[in-house]
Length: 303
Image (cartoon, rainbow, N blue to C red; front, side):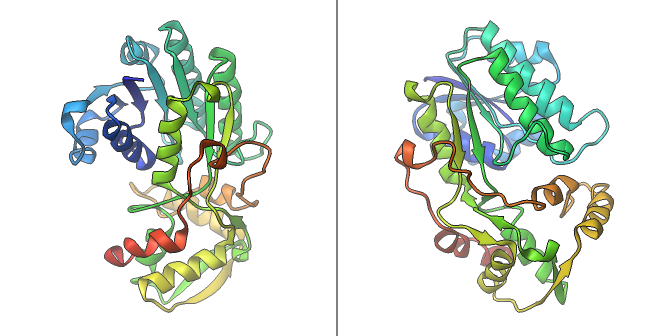
């Protein structure tokens, strides 16, 4: 792979992936709706190997222009909040299908779709259901597509540990949605980027699905306590019923950067851990880094 198009390359995972691919000598085209914002987000990466292209997964013509003449495509676009015509169906279903269809039409060698652990076309959650349906549509349009399903990702600027540390700055008590008993298997975002890069150059990964989860399973309560400890804070923790969390998330979604969304609440209604039914990091010969090893390196600077 010498030229790779990354849709959503200015996002949390996208930025790490662009950095990883360019470090390995690849030329990367970042396809995003807002090129100027992407250039700012990616300014620390070697610009000689990165170009930013205006494209929208909901617009087939812009997608076709972005993928023309490339070796591989990674769709890392993610929408956690529905606003206007940016809906889960438009982005994760129809948008994912458009990228796959145009990549196939352009004879692109490899396509990777970034989905998520727990994606289920039969889910009652609009977000989780769209993720699952999107996987099916992509496979129909591009049978050799590789699907990666990361668990909750952490790293500098994440919405997990940094959010807890930020809330602890001005709240005397912190909520635990659903009592904090949901089990999660957080994965370091840079490990996911390494896995995607490895998949791109390994023909043996064509057509497979990979579950990319961290080395340990924790409850939400465990992770919240760890975030507070790393940030040097002590706070009272209290249980917040799912229904109240959903109502609060609905209100938060009117903010430009909501601390909680309904899709995130949906993901906390059931355990978010690897099923064991699909290969993971071990199959890619990648050693995963733990929460305890990574989070203390960045959480204090944001607390």
